Image (cartoon, rainbow, N blue to C red; front, top):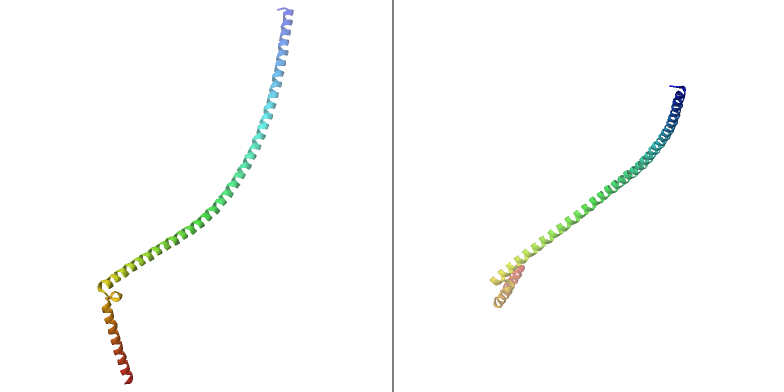
Length: 161
């Protein structure tokens, strides 16, 4: 190889080397820029994740407080429900007792009516009391008068002695 060939080869090598350096520097610049963008993006995402985490934690705290308030309200409502249910049960028990008492009174009244009807039937069939025939009534009043007079005489006689 001649000097000219070597020189041209050397120039080509230098040209390639310059191109390689240029490409290498551009690749390095691109990679640095890409790394910086990725780092910025990672920081942004990290910051965004932390902000969202804080917001979610705040929301969770609010929801937990709301749940606790709802539980307290629920307990109060359950207590009120229990008290009202006891009142209702008491009223129903009183109503049932009153109904039973009415039924008992009606039963007693019905039995009394039956007994009275039976007694009236006995009196009518045997012709006793106010159901006596008229002539027996007159006789009885006369007997009573006679018995009454004789008694009065006995009392007067006893008083004289």
